[in-house]
Image 1 (tube, rainbow, N blue to C red):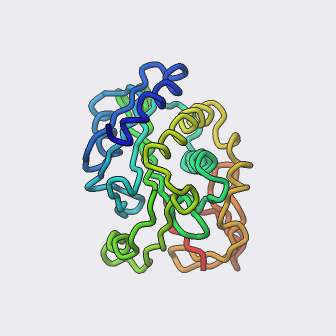
Image 2 (spheres, rainbow, N blue to C red):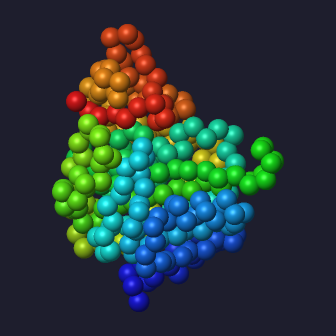
Image 3 (cartoon, rainbow, N blue to C red):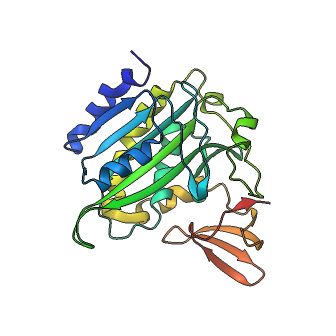
Length: 266
């Protein structure tokens, strides 16, 4: 039995009592767990499911970035849930809070969707949604994709995933095994999955308000000088009530949304 399969029953038992119809699937290989769950949702399959794979051949991140995935050395999974929050703003931050607090106290969050260990990327989050039925009348499914380094990846392999023509260098990688020696992908999944489901349900009922203080304690950019994708520099001053980054620039406080910029500390 594979490491991931060995933890399926425990994850299901922890989640199913509060999430009827929940299933866990493990595949040996797939293009992308998130792409697969988005395909299912668009075809009308709206049951809650956690899909993980030993290997992803085309893992995806934000703004066209790939995700380096090696069997046994990384954890890649996606969680699909029907969700109906009053406000979707700040969802990726809530996911990051849940993951970081489930994994290790040393982890921090780099707005809007990266897990950091000592300013090195250890994981990433991609949140997507799909709807069925008429606009405003059908169900809406959220698909939360997570990529987590268990072993520290080779720097060259990570650099190769930067989109062609990008002027931003790949961030130096980190691995969870630096903090938790000997941890396996299955053990990491068992740590995060039940809490992630619970936190997504809390987000649906309470929104980002339930996570704002937790995020502030984990905010890796707070007080740092950052440069936005348009070249503007300023000081990161946390996030507002909707999870948008606040940057104090020469022109005053600028509100930054995840759709507008990529933020790098200077």
